[in-house]
Length: 534
Ligand code: GLN
Image 1 (cartoon, protein in one colour):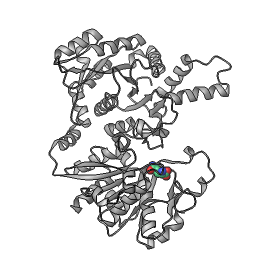
Image 2: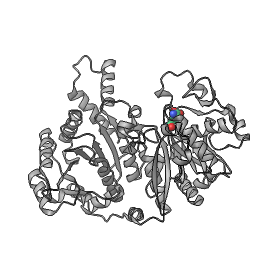
Image 3: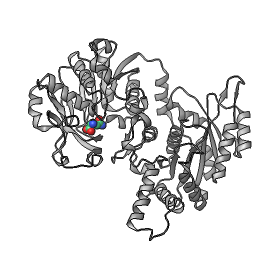
Image 4: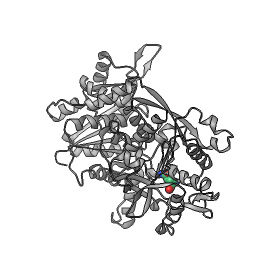
């Protein structure tokens, strides 16, 4: 880490002001300057495993190549920086305490009193630099979750303060705050920012730049005021005003020269940044689309779109490439269970997508959606649980096995989806998940092959149950095609139903690998399927 630069972003005034997008955008700008960049998130909550948290409270669980189940902000980082991350990029207070307490149990502290300072703060610093263990990076970006003043994030901030004490010339602090617009006064107000910076300085962290989230661009006088009261250069007060799309944020920050302010501190020479590919994508998102496609997303957490954020983004990326836009019709799976008319529910729908999920709530509704899509020849895309649903539906209605089911929901029925042999005796559910990247071999005359244009792909997984190979022949003779397989473990990865405009379901989560300027091949193919059905 001899010459690595550490950039920290903290948040003030309110939560959800876009620290994740800001740091991911800065990551993109720095990468385009030719620097190598690592990025990580410190989350103050005590959960040890973000994978077990409710998507209702925290949004989607994002899965990394190496099988890390992480906060959804890592998805933003990957999409903006076009870079795969690992489990090292996700640190929670729970993980830190777990490590410290395990060491204490092992006797590593030799009977000493175990305290937040230095034991917890040392462990945080160890994790901060652990992203450099195997690879050198020019820059490490670290987002500290929560808002200044929260008790929960204090240990992280103290650890950062200590780290900076020992590595002062290598640290840069960005503080992001809300600058509210008061309609009646017609003014942007700087006072909450002043207070937040005062609190941060009280902790011993002095911001080098202040990124101000505001409804309107900050004018010179507002910037001057913040600069004076918060003791930063005027050029280091960055206006992060609202823009119609997340993907425009890198342009706003580039125009405000945030990366230039960082470069100045470390004496990096100024280099022109090429964002033309992003500009093209953003331009596309602004042009009036030729067509709007309505995709029904049949799920459990439909009240919170963050629960399916990577799916939503992947649909956006793919549709934009075809110059159309996607309107998502959120369908609560429970509602489909008892309705008499699916025709009404799906009357304006061009495609149906059943995403991943856990638990049996709404299962019947999802099966009905897959059934409807298959029979009414509406394009269907099943992701993970969406594949289980497609397989169960096919077994119940084509193979005429009314009690076909998944072991996730029953242990007695005809289990067309089951645990693998070696999983049966495991009691620790978390431990038995298939997580992260696995290879998949494709059959050449398939939709999947047409989409990927290659015969071996690698995709990310997060599930426990698999297609049951005992029934494979029965399925294939009845017309379900198995077009993707993991050969090492003999596992079904992709199924298709021929004589249908587009019906494909996969055991993995392709949404995690979609990028704004590189839509995922299966999402592109789905959109193409929906378009050609028009
Ligand atoms: N609940 C299913 C399983 O564990 C599917 C998981 C998912 O959709 N991610 O196998």
